[in-house]
Image 1 (tube, rainbow, N blue to C red):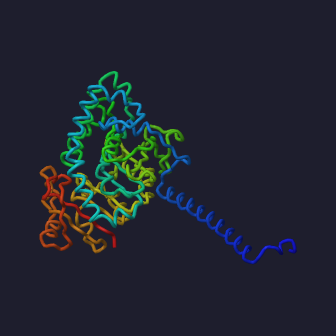
Image 2 (image 1 turned 60 degrees about the horizontal axis):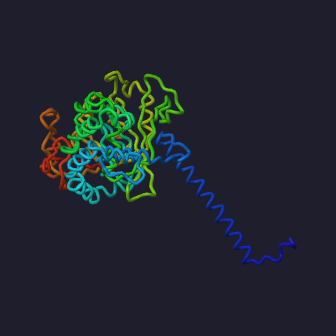
Image 3 (image 1 turned 135 degrees about the horizontal axis):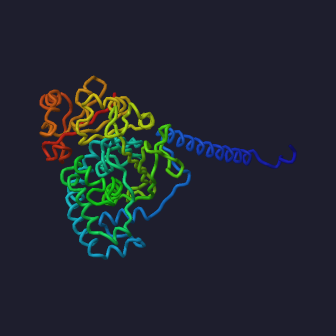
Amino acid sequence: MLKYSFISVTAFALLLSLSFCGNQTQTNKENGQEKQAKNEQKNNVKKPSDIKTDRKFNDLARFIAGMKPEEGSVYEELTKRKEWINYAKNADAQWNNVINIKRPKLIKWRENELQKVTEQGGTLFYPFSGPDFLHAGTFFPEVENIVMIGLEPIGTLPDIDKIAKTNLGGYFNGLQRSLVTILQYSFFKTIDMNVDLTGRVVSSIDGTLPVIMLFMARTNHKILNYEKMALNKEGTLVPIADFKGDKSTYYATKIEYQRGDKPEERKTLYYLSVNLSNDMYEGKGGLNQRKDLKTFIENLDFKSVYLKSASYLMYKPYFSVIKNIILNKTKYLLQDDSGMAFNNFTNGKWDITLFGAYAGPISLFANYWQNDMNTAYKQKKYPIKPLPFGIGYQFKEGTSNLILVEKK
């Protein structure tokens, strides 16, 4: 002990403090890593340990969105072609109303009415979504993960070099055709997507992937990486490089991205093409047959759910499994009247806020009229707030509705 006697009490205290801080920092780091690992396990999504970024995916997104290429883009020469110049001009016109008029209204409304919902982050679950990143990314910008599900195929990355040698103008026409209803009316038509996004109009547009990428570019998001995933038998998404699938395997798109004004963040979108009904549909097993899919959804740590233009599917008994999973798990649910019947939320377990007006369903879904919802709007049984935009099947401002519920 004598050889340490020259160390003063103050110096010793300082060393002890530094040692404690070092250990505490290491402990905090380990706790953070453990928390991240638990979150990934809870969300049932396997992420690679190395964080990959490849600018080619963002360059591609800007090119198919008709946006000016960033310096060094591999597509810069192609943007000098007549087909792209004409397409970019038409795309700007097609997007003008959405970007400059409608989307600012959505953002302002979100900031006023969804602040509590969006600030919690976490995972957003958006079933029956199709490729609608436009509304998911606008209403829920703070979430770390978005999980979107539709029947439409996931699609493949377009081979632009090949397309440019064959029919570049035809490819752009196909993209614009696929966006007409979502940009004009706020929703995709399932019957149109069955044609537009399955290679029937343009063989190279074979799924939702290019539309999602285009939406990200046009809404000021930057794509950092893309990866095709597979759902294994345990209900976990894994990179296809690590997995050998078969004819029954469900595949998924994984896109990592960031907001244009938030270069420090890294968010993830997953899109799966699956059947969410209880049983078989068009050759795809439902949640009663597909334990892998049911496990995946049940293990998602989602706090928010968004439902829009959902064809009133969860009104039907053969969509009861997914409906009950959502009601049991979520804390917040934002929907129009096509999502779930209003009586699912009037049992005293939910705080309800109504927006806009209830004009009833469109003629295609006329048998889903809800007397109790109509009465709630007329008698002001719950808070009713304005909705300064049109959305859903009743897409005109003044006839649209949204319902926000929070589990008590």
